Amino acid sequence: FYSMYETKPVGRHKICVCTNVSCMIRGSDRIVEHLEKRLGIKMGETTEDGKFTLKEVECLGACGGAPMFQIGKQYYENLTPELVDSILENLEAGDGE
Image 1 (cartoon, rainbow, N blue to C red):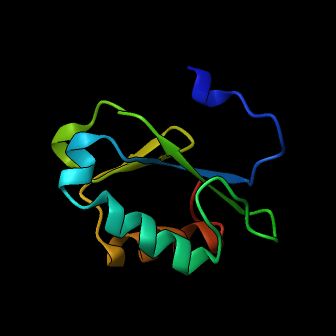
Image 2: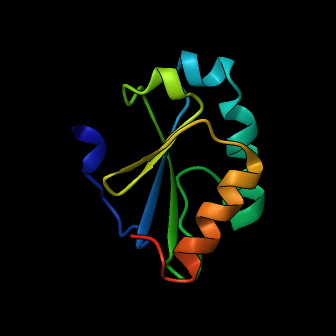
């Protein structure tokens, strides 16, 4: 639960990317690279507009759906760069959480 504590403001949508072994083996590094490029930030940073924070986390217990990330209470599994783009577009449009 320590990942819920923050020492500085975070974006409206905190993207918690699992980079533990199962997700890493299944391509979480590719997902992280895509997120950083798409959002224009590095892990641990927040976008200038305050919409997104990118955070690396340990196992979120969804190894069967790796690679995955969590935004709010929602898990997103079996991620691909295309699926990530779709999720971000929905959040940017206000259709997400």
